Every structure is written in C-alpha cells, then in structure tokens.
Image 1 (tube, helix red, strand yellow):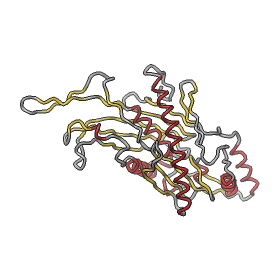
Image 2 (image 1 turned 60 degrees about the horizontal axis):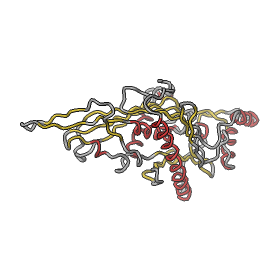
Image 3 (image 1 turned 180 degrees about the vertical axis):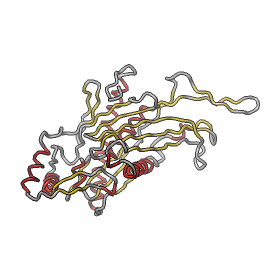
Image 4 (image 1 turned 60 degrees about the vertical axis):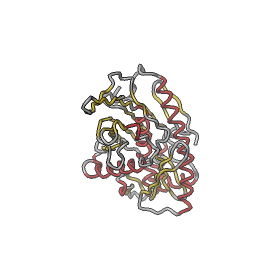
Length: 339
C-alpha cells in the first residue's frame, strides 16, 4: 500500500494512492436509475451502531462488482486509504490533543493527565481511561444510539490498549500504591464518513505523541509525611514512547474480497468486518469481528495478512508526519478549526 506523506502549507497528510474520483457517485446514481427498481432501502451496520445510508440495489451491485475488480467508486484500490489530515496540539487546555480527518470522518481527541490512585492489581502503574462522545455527529446518534456506539468504541480501545507493551504505564507511577498519573482520553466524533475505528486509533496515537506530563518530585519531611511537588517549567515534562502503540485496521468483506478504509456506502454493502490492531512492527495484538455476516477461516487469514501489511505502512506514514510536525517547533501556526 503506497502511502506517501507530505505537507500542504501547514497541513499534514497521509495520502492514499488515488484521490477521490470526481463524479464517482454520479455513476453509481445513474446505475441505480437505470436499474428501474426505484426501491431504496435503509441499510448499514446498525448492529455496530454505525450511521446508516440509503442505497438502491443497483448502487450496491455497482459497488460490489467494482470491488471484485480492485476498483472502488472513488478510484482507490482495495488496500488504499483515503487522504487523511493529521494535526496535533489543537486544544490548549489539554496535556495532548490531535485532530484527524480521514475522508469525511472527523475525529478530535484530547488527553488530560490528572493525579490518581493506582489500581490495586497494579500498584506501580498508571492507567488510561477512555470516553467517547458521538452525539455531535448526527441526530441518529443522539441519546441512546450515540451512547451505545460510544461505549462500543471505548471498550474496543480498552481492549487494544490492554497489551502490556502498548504504553509504558510504569512511567506514569509517581509513588507506588499512593499516587500515579491517570490519562483521561476523550474522543469526540465530529463527523462520520465511514471507518471510524481506524480514524480514532490514529487520532489517539497522535494525541499520545503530543502528550506532555509534568515532572514531579516526592518530598518527605522528618515525620515521614510525603508531599508532591510539580515542576513549574512547562518544558520539564515526560513524553510517552508510542513506538508500540497499535493502530486499528478495519477490513470490510465485500463480495469475495475485502477492503480497507471503507466509506459509509461500502460499509452498507459489507455484512462482516474484521478489526485488527497492529503495531509498527506488524504484530497483531487483538482482533474483533463486527457485523451480522460470517467469515470463513481462509478469509480471516487473508484479512490478517492484509492488516499486517497495511498496518505497518500506516505506522510508517503516521510517524513521519508526526516527526515533521514536531520539527516545526512551538511557534508553528495553528491551521485547524480551533486555530
């Protein structure tokens, strides 16, 4: 999967092989009208809480046949991502933040470091807490629908980060059994244009890269009372090592083939998908199947191989972008919607 990284002005991109083909959906619409059925059905992966789209049978057939020929509606191949815009340090009152726009999917992540008490089972480690808000995306996801989707995404993130080496949690410990840093990761789904799990995982990794935690000292007086002193220097901080932080690669089965970075229309044509969390070295740390359909063992192994290959390329491109943005320094102008 060729994923060149570049910079347009101050905007940083992960680009797929092909830009969206102009008029691509016009062709699909014509196919639907020529089909003459006129029957539109609301479809989508509602079991996973995704926003649904309305497609005719002819439009779905058009998408499925294109995927079998390795030619998707927007001109991409089956293993190509859409253009992705990545920007870090977009929210001033957080310890770290990032915004990722993957096609029409728009994600904002903010991380806040606060002192807490270590968990009993891991007294010498800090921990992460995830909260996902989907209510701003569309009326469909207001109330219970958005809560269910948010809970599903948060549980998936907990599972992805349950791997011991994903984040060095021992570095978040201040005083064993008494004090540690708790990283509250808030994810806001601004717009859903398909493939939200991949976009969220990219945004979380970028925000962790941007996170700065103040250094602290534990002082003990003559009576044995311990006090915690925070450094006043904003540059005297701890940076997290994100080398082993995995990214999610979602592979959607359409017909006899599978695609990465599916759009909402492609998700409506897929009955089953496989979410694979992959490290920068290509190691698979977790898998999850979503959708009502089934996957045969041969398809699962093929999807795992594709996920490893695509995931490694995704990590390389993302790290290159984050390093380039880091080299711009603190004086770089903000280009996002909060700039």
